[in-house]
Image 1: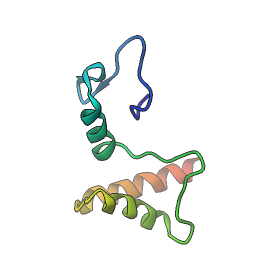
Image 2: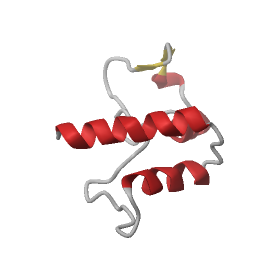
Image 3: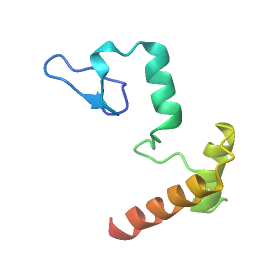
Length: 84
């Protein structure tokens, strides 16, 4: 549900103080593109690349030039990997 791939049938879900029941396809696409990252259950990572390179690959596809954001995402991923 958090990725917007499934929709609630009851209750409400808010993203940045906006009720998602009013999101259209464009809103969901923008949310997925700019706010979250999806990793499938089998990870679908490029094995010959590092964690950093895999994250940068996805962010570069998104034309993200924000170095601080890229560094934050890598740090978050490394933290998650070390705690799982």
